[in-house]
Amino acid sequence: MRYLTPFRFGRRNVPEAREFEAHPLDLFQREMNRLFDEFFKGTGLRRWAEDFESFGSFTPQVNMTEDEKSIVVSAELPGMDEKDIEISLSKDSLTIKGEKKEEAEHKGKEAYCIERSYGSFTRVLPLPKEVNPDKAEATFKKGVLTVTLPKVEKEKGSQKKIKIKAD
Amino acid sequence: MEDAKKNIEKAQAKDASLAERTKDRVIFTPAVDITEDSNNLYIYADVPGATEKGVNITLENDVLTIEAQVEEAPMEGYTRTYSEYATGDYYRAFTLNEAIDRDKIEATLKDGVLGIVLPKAEAVKSKKIPIKAG
Image (cartoon, each protein chain N blue to C red):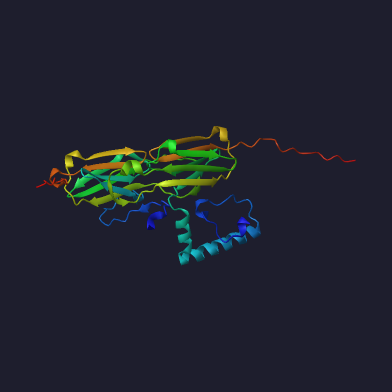
């Protein structure tokens, strides 16, 4: 049913899914989604919906890079403590959760200008390749979170040729 | 509350007074929080990825300038699958309306947040005046 809704809340949080299922109907669906997205963008309705959805939360920006052996996901999370960040990994997706609290810095002070983001966030990122969860590593340095996920090496020779016997 | 939406996209700096740079890098305007108590003015700026060495804070003619350079880790052999943010340096300038004790300005850099404490000069500190009961 998910595919039939014109636009999904929180869609912008999710990068394009894997591309291998590019059935013509999917392509058509994608095109329709895009049309709806564009339409709502114009009216400001979509923005409103997004505002509503993300009240008291924020969406950190992430980058994903990969080479032959691993996928590296990085996210900018300034002002957060590594204890407040939770990373979980499933076979094909990575979830980054966290909460940034405001109180400590602003306690007892008068605020003039608050531009930085506070609140909680959750990001679920579909992974383009299968990864090995046991060897995943994460570092948090200078407000930048980096998660390294080694790809699962495909077993060589798992494909077998079967001889056909002729009578 | 218009700012409820916190899709934190970094805004590219478009300060006209910013001189042209020799380095070909994108410059961002960091998001800041400015707070005050009776003794100090506090500025917190989000500068993820910036190093202590790369941070430059100057106060000249009541204009406080923050510059932060980001050291980019080279990612050789990697291809970008998905990208939402770009890396670049940070720049922002503020005009201070209050007298600041210049010698006592302190700055810290922790977890990608630059915190600047600007102590107010003695002359402008607000004083509580006790009322004598007659």
